[in-house]
Image (cartoon, rainbow, N blue to C red):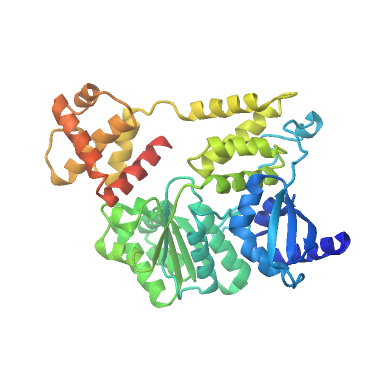
Length: 451
């Protein structure tokens, strides 16, 4: 096939793909990709590097073949050929001067009627192996409000994109249905504060109207309901009202429902009545895709090589990933030239700032909040059943994450002897190997402590 005709067909293929893939994803992975030969049913496509080659082969190959067949009926397979990218690690200072640490951080106002932020969209949510089920469920919710997936319960650690996905659902509902559907997003803290104010001002009916006369309720961070009996009761009745009317309900939490302490059994059963999906930390390819999109959105002009270094080094969560991207862009904008070693030094500098030794007070506070137990009760020599296990976990995490000595932990917990501390540590260490629920609890707590 002639080169010009092949390019025309390629443009049509991309236009068709744009209807099936979010624009941000399409732009990230297909910008530097182009076909150069179609012969004997084989389409050869030039790609800039191995990462793009692997991503296209693993994530888009079937979709690309299916779409391309509409314009190239004889297509049998696609070969992805790596062409050395001529772009260099260095960028001209005149271009880099365009970078401003704050100037490209666009400010969006929250919509007062929905409490949604319009910058959270499906189009700029990066899909990877860590969240593809959650994203598919979110799309299913939008297309079948209140029917197939109700409620939807999404859980995962800090900075993994739960809030983005929840608000994107709300924004997509508005985009799809317009004013015919009323959407309300709220954090659990907002829900609780609104309830307290309504009780204080004796206008509970106004509160109930706000959260019950809607089509889609999105409630973020429901683990904060732990121990809040009045809020739990109000949410239970709100849930029943909406569910019976086939209205859509969506929740998020940092842990699955069964691990939320001091939650009413009847409310827990409501959380577990629909679909429960977790979001895990992103893999390398997803982290790089996120960096490419953020780099583009903020006009940082950082090279692919720098983004690849960032994706290799920052592995915990998206929030830390974006924070390091901002930090690197800000630092490099003040240098005339730099190389890979300089970028690595800056990344390590950023990581050191965020990995200072964790204080025992922070660990104690997080354990106390997680299990809804007073800090004093964790420290005192009391043998209440509900305190024993959290105290053993406290000892384990003080040693495992805080790296505190057994003698220090014994002194902290009111002079308990060394053997008692060692026993508690080894008991938890052994139990997490056989108890999946406990393992998940420990991992959630570690993430909270390190963030």
